Amino acid sequence: MIITKILGLTSALTKSKKAKLGILAIEMGLLIYAIRSKKLERKEQELINKTKDIVS
Image (cartoon, rainbow, N blue to C red; front, side, top):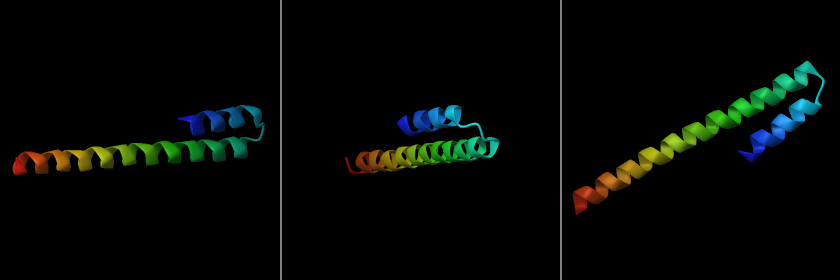
């Protein structure tokens, strides 16, 4: 993910521990969001495939 790389670079350039923790929290939130989105996408695709099988 490009955003994670940018945030990682920003974290490397930041010396404040609070700022680093904030950036880490943002990165974790983005990763969790991406994983959940991917899971939902897979479930939707499975439902579409099941529906196609039933109709065929």
